[in-house]
Image: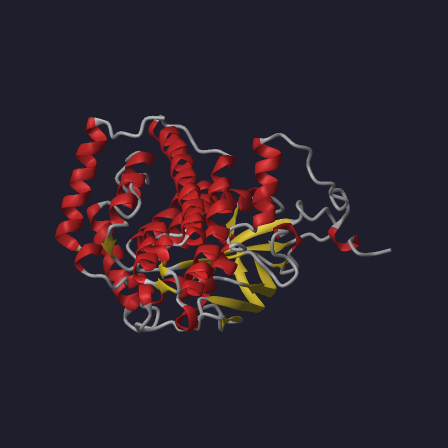
Length: 407
C-alpha cells in the first residue's frame, strides 16, 4: 500500500484545500457542526446553496463525465476531495442517496435524454432523490417485496408500501423496485422505475425516531400511474438493476462521517473526574480506549487498501463491507461508554460534554447497524465472497413468489 499522494494528487489536494478555505469554515474555527443542527429550518436551503456551489466548481461528483457536470476525474480525486471537505463545516447528507445510489443507477440503464433531464439538476441540488426499496415484510431480503406494478396501456399502476425511506418527505424523485410478475421466483419478477414523488397517490409519512429526528419515512402508493418511459432496465430485470444500486450503496454508506471517536473520548476522559482521580488514569477506561483505538487503526488501514485500488484504477470489492461491520458496533459501544462516564449527565443531550455528540451517536448507532445492510448480511458477504465459505441454504430459490408460504 502506498500511503502518500503522488505529485499530481498532492497538487489536486492543495487546489481543493484552497477552494474550501475560500468558500467554507474550518472546523477548528467553529466548533458547532452544521450536520448536527437537525432543528435548523434553513438547513435544507443551506445545503442546496452549498451543493450548487460545489457543482459549479466541478467538485459535486468529480468522477462523472464533464457533459453531466462532473470533472471527468479519477476515483482517488473524489476521495481526496471528501477527505478535505471533512475538515470543514458544510451541510451534508441531503444528496448522498441521490448522487451516490439513484443517479448512478439511471446512468447505467437509462437513455441519454433521461440523463440530460435529471443528472444536472440532481448534481446542483435543485432536485433531491430517494431510494424506495425496504418494505414492512422485506428489509434485508429486498427480493421479498410486495409492492406491485401492473401494466395499464402504455404505462403502469403501482400499489403498495415502502418503509425506512430516508428523505422521502423532501425528495422530488425516487427509484422504486416493484413486483411485476409474482408467478416466477422472487428475484426474477421485479422491475425498477423512477417516479415523481409529487405524483397523485404518493404519500410520505415521517417516522419519529428515538433521537427526536424524523429522517425516515413510510411511503404509501395508491394507484400511482407511471409511464413505461420511466422504467429503469428491462421488465423482470429489476434485481439486476437493484444490485447496481446496492453496490453503490455499500460505498455511499460505508462508515459514518464525522461523529465522536477516540480523540473525543480521550478529551472526555481527561476532563472527567472519577472517585480515584481523572478517568484517563483509570486502567479500565484506558483499556477501553486502547481497544477502540486499535479498531480505528484497523479501519484506517483497511480504507487505505481501497484507496490504493482506486489510485491504480481498480474498483474496490466486497472487502468494503468490512468497514461497516466494525464501525457500526464501535460507534454505538463508544457512545454508550462515554455516556456512562458522564454519570447522570449521560441522559442529557444538551449542555453536556461533546455537545451531545456521544448521546446522538448512541441513539443513531442501532439504526446504522441496519441501514445499508445489516451486520448479518454484511458478514455473509464477507464470508461468502471474501473468504469463500459455503452459502446459506436458500429454500425459496426456485419457488414462485406467489407459492411462498403455501403448504
